[in-house]
Each structure stands twice: as structure tokens, then as C-alpha cells.
Image 1 (spheres, rainbow, N blue to C red):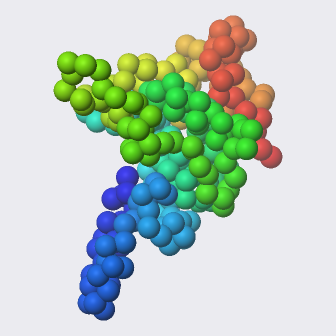
Image 2 (cartoon, helix red, strand yellow; image 1 turned 45 degrees about the vertical axis):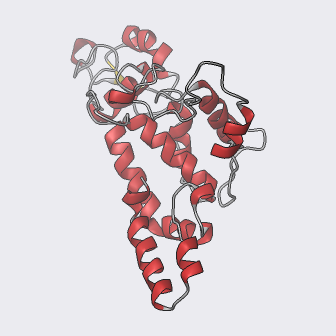
Length: 245
């Protein structure tokens, strides 16, 4: 995702400028990333993202997340949506309230491994969770710390250990589930793509030809009658929130 924000081009430009000025040490130190521990100038990258780039990419990721389900060759869109938020948190970006609200609904649905789920839960709900504008530390070990903590390899092995887990989805599924199997994502997608249909049976009209009933809480889900609403509540309650006036 670093490339989606144009950070590679920005990095090359600044490296070229440092080279032209004969500052080889500065050139070597310039590395831009949306993940703070890998970024040489967090303030610069944060400012770039907060000036509109982050809002634009969030909109793109949300559109992909809520699009009709399909099998993904690489990253699951829910995983990418949540990972974007996690990286932006490490930079201390200003995340829109609507984005944080959505991540709280879907962070368990993108295939994150158990340890990552614990980290996201703490960041989102605390204690001492993420605050807008403040760089957040997920307390993740770097590669050297991870290797050191693993101790010596077992006898009769090659000495290699798998430390990095490739992101889930498509060819690299972690087995933790993804947006193609999530009932929560299915509900959000159906709510987004079929706003004028019953959330239970898909009917376009209410019972007896009446207009569809509206969820009194979120005002975003409609039902043909009380039976469909009751049947759907078990899932809908996971994404339903009080409508803002």
C-alpha cells in the first residue's frame, strides 16, 4: 500500500535531491513507508496522508470491501482495509470517525492471525488504545528481536524458521476466514448494494404491498415485516448503530 500513496516516488525524489547536494548519508537514510518503524520521516509521511491521500485510499478500500463477493487472487479486501488502519495508526494519522467505526465492525473478519486480532482489539478498544494524531505502538518485535527470542534451531534442521506470515486471502489464505465467508461482511455488502430490499428475504415491498419497514435504530436496513426483521437481527445487530441526526 505504500505505493498507493505515491511514497516511492516521493522517496526517489528526495534521495535524488540529497545526491545532487552531495549528501550521501542523507540519501541512504531516506525511506518512506506507511508503517512507522520502517519510515525515516514519520512527520512528513503523516502530513502527506492527512492532507487528503489517506481519505482517498480509505474510500477506495471501502468500495472494494463492500463490492460483490468474489475470490481474490492476493489480499482479501477486508484484510487490506484493516491493515491500512493499523499502519496509519503507527504514523499517528487522523483517522475519520466513520473509518474507525467500520474497522471496529470488521477487524475480526479479514483473516488476521490470533495475535494480530489481540493487537487490533487493544488499539481500537483499549486500554491505552489508539488516539488520533498520536503515533501508536503495537509493541511488535522487529525481525532481529523475533529471531533472538526464538532461541537455537532444533537439531537436524536447516536452521531456517518461518517468522513472517504472508497476508491472508487468495493464494496466501491463513485459514482464519475472510470476507468471502463472513456473515458480517455479507450483511454490510447486502445493506450497501441492496438498500431498498428486505434484509431478510430480499422483497422489494412490505407485507400486503406496503412500504418496507425501516430499522428504527440505524435507519439503514429495511424489512418486509416483523418476522424477517426478527430473523435477521442476530446478524444485523453486529453492524447496527444508532443513526446520527
